[in-house]
Image 1 (cartoon, rainbow, N blue to C red):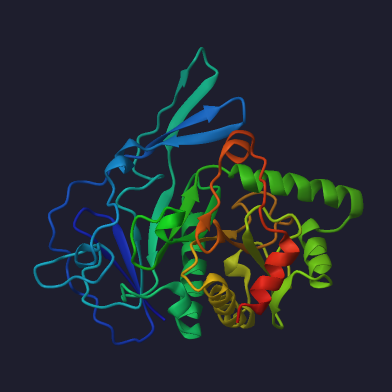
Image 2 (spheres, one colour; image 1 turned 180 degrees about the horizontal axis):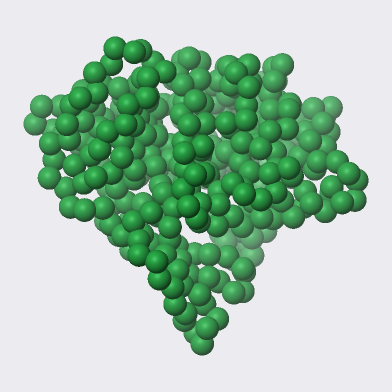
Length: 358
């Protein structure tokens, strides 16, 4: 894989990841762009012990443009885009409208008599374009291309983990306008957070209690139990995909490597090779379930950069808010206000439907 970093017109970094060594990446970004926005502001919620990012510049980000104005397609004569080249394999670049950024001046403050702490939203946000084909989707990628994407995730996890102040790296994909996508082109994102996210903190607290009580890893025990049960969808020598017993979403699949590793860079070559075919099968099952493209979020759970790496267990969560061919699940009163999910589909039924979908 050939890795070529360049700079866009406003100074943001873009990296080409090519599957061939003769790719020419000398095309310049000929646009006139304003400087990148400053970092967001972080506000601490003392009631929930969480940080909230206030990123007002994102209010003006690109929203569902027509295909001939897609900023993620390759540049064409007279129509420059975020990618200067006229074709590419996989590209990563700094988000033009980042939720977190390393471009800030160190400062902090307080609101509400010192109860609410303020600080800059340091970190970094990147966009990962999986293919130059605007009309494709991740499910259309070849296993070889998925292998390239895994290498890109590993590369960026290592690089972003080295940024001062970054505590967690999150690779994810949102697919479909029903789930909140604002650009149709097949792409994912990577967030380098300046804190450990609430979901990760909760999982690691649970894992720590389990380890203190049993001496074993909670994630490994859950995987072992699921592999003996009825909710397994697919598996190979290195990975297992299953619907969890306490699934929150109508159709939710977790994909675990059989070996406990903290993050994507820790995967072996064999594990990286084996991931793509299994994951593509699960995505095909999602789309076949109702005969329409399934909206989804695919979220990699990686260990924090500096703490509890021995407790963490890399895994991917894939879930959809579609509960029937013509119905979506909305996070309404109980979920949004109280954080208590009400699932409309029994996990055992969801697993059987996904197994029978192909």
